[in-house]
Image (cartoon, rainbow, N blue to C red; front, side, top):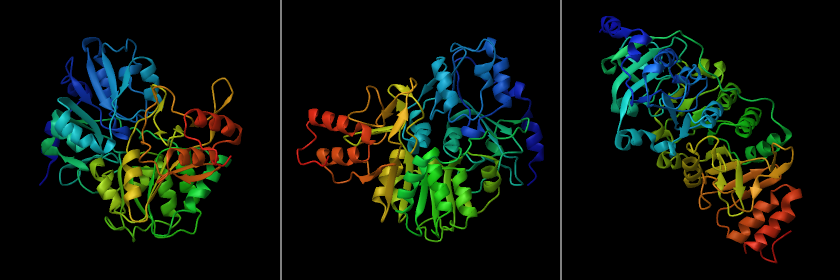
Length: 448
């Protein structure tokens, strides 16, 4: 069937499409690199006539016109973020953005069962294929579930959007779309892979890579340390690795190009690199485009603990902001200030531990430099007031700093304190021991 007639009938300008949004509406803006651009500008142009519009999305890679146009304030638009990045933190400081707590794996279900309104959904897509489908690019995530709830569905076509094969729920048919906007075909927003690994990154990565067997299946979180691990894997002798991850990052492209990824040992989705969304540099977008090696799937599949546990030798590698002596892991906030989000870290920590031969690693530098130039420990007696517990102490498995790797599974509170202090920076160990004694989680027989 030729869908060109229907396409032309539904094709409108961004300004025409933006008229569907009314004051008080809840508007979904795709996800990460599929965040619309032409529609964003068109809505910014209507700012003076719109009030109390709530816009949802996450991991913004570019500034939004609705917040950068003169007159922007919370009375017109606010941003509800499923996962915050640097730009969204700046919006939050202006009272324009708020975090929506979640387990990322549950997000499609939120839309289908818990979210009452999606008045308008607008997302960037790849050009329509011969069968009438618009591909969601590297952001299958939760978009189909959001579409199912939306009153109005608008797609913004970008010829630079890669077509990511599936999988399932990786695109939408023209028959389900109300309006089509042809955008400016701007390059996708990028999340750089980071600079050269630091000496701390290298030490942490070296300890983790030693724990990875041939045929393991990898999940890498975003950040410098997971990226450093990826680089070291690419330079290793490992073989027949697989990928099943929430976020597809540049490191996976490097590992594949080094000949380390085949997916031959995966229990499910053999030979496929499975992910819920991808963001990185143009290298990544070019790699995933029309590539049958990758598998774009919704997040309630990629992050499902039962799916993860079904894959043998599952290796999960993520970052943390700080860890306390009880084993509680904070990977998302600085006290009450939201830094990122929970994402799927807990799902992968739990699923990897349940996997046959699986392991989860949460890595962090032992210290960081504060704004006043002083050095502080990331291993703390207790998490600071208001900090979010991303991974509970019952779920924590391997914690890694440049001073070592410890497994907390099966350890009592005093054994955990001893283990975690052993990988803290030496300058802070006596202080941590003193605090552990005050909390009655230190025994005289503990090693100092």
